[in-house]
Image 1 (cartoon, rainbow, N blue to C red):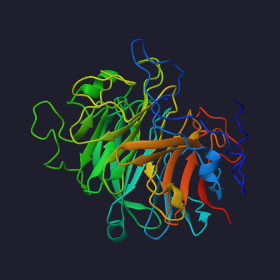
Image 2 (image 1 turned 90 degrees about the vertical axis):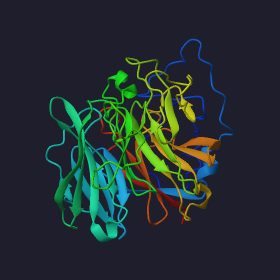
Image 3 (image 1 turned 180 degrees about the horizontal axis):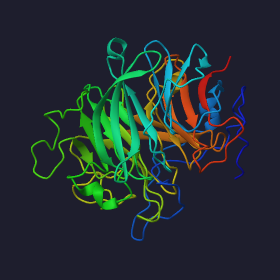
Length: 401
């Protein structure tokens, strides 16, 4: 299949987006290497009917919101409607009143920018309207690459009152995580990578390859599953993860969904990317199991993708402007070059399809805006893409006029 030229198009999308990348429980993994499942591993069955991209996008259009960016990684919206986002080299940017503020809100000076590391996760405190607290995750250099999470007070003109939440999280130029989200319980959840050392995912004495759960001040909640267990870090909520970069909570059920990169060849057969329902204290298998392998006491993925799509985000849509998407789960695909839509009934996958297959190149973040639009970002300047003249971009899906 020839890739479309990635120039911005306004107007009807049915023809431009007629290509649907098949998806379901059979398909895609980690960094995007094309590989068949390991010998002796069964091929999973299809999740359900596929939604044609043209049908899913009929009556909608895409607008460019901001262009000329450098690897926008995480997008959040303030209660006043401003869009705040990170650029991986270390900038926190603001889009407001229909324009991108020319100067960054802040530049984080000690960011270590590697192949997959840099300034990554961004989250606003649930009570941001009152306390203006903003949380960021970024890689830094100290006896190798590490990740820290820091809280700031956002003043409107900059970031002040820096407070360390957690640091010393093992990382590397690859498999550095890191997604931040506050959950329905008001706790801060942090995904971490395995720092390219696959054995760390199963070890409870390290923060690598885990989901962490913290109070908003960085202290450990007393009801975390490994509190008081000898040889285990109390911050851990779940373990056995390789490199999760997507995290969101399903409306209604409150279930945590994560997207996770599968092995890349050097640490296992290519493919095996995952969507997981992540629950307290559970073991998600890496690196003892991967792809669709199963083992007692370890959780298989809800969805698995071989060859790789490289899932980079996670978002449940709950707005009304795009009513057909209400309750659907979305994530950006880097190698898969599209926006994955998964239709769910609670824990059950009903159908899925890939939007914009090849149209905009590598897609990373996806976020719902206060206007009900679905925003997504390209990642074509990350060293692995083929940038268009105006990349990287933040775009949004809106109803056609």
